Length: 134
Picture (cartoon, one colour):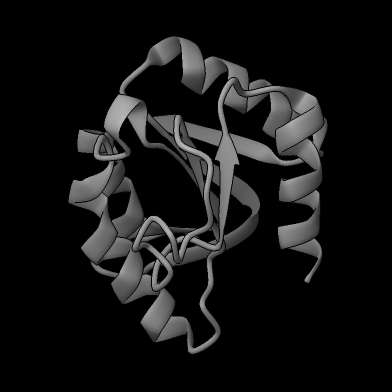
């Protein structure tokens, strides 16, 4: 893998960016990502914006928090990455307290799958596996 220098961005399909305000939720999701054979990169929403400037992960898991708004500051960065890829990559999973689809939550341009909380390996792991195998 090459090193990032200046504005160069590294694409690493084996890494999954795990973003959320709750450190406990980030640990839980990171463990599930590891069970998929991938490397989690755990960040708070504030730090994740900086990380996305140097790393294009294989997937992004966003913890929306209680109102699905915890990661709103990242949406434009993610949308730019996905547009640049031309293929809606990296895939984005939203962990939500609300059940629904990306369309019903008005996030279809950015979010591929909504996974309802509570976060369990049985719910999240198949979604990660499916998104990264397409």
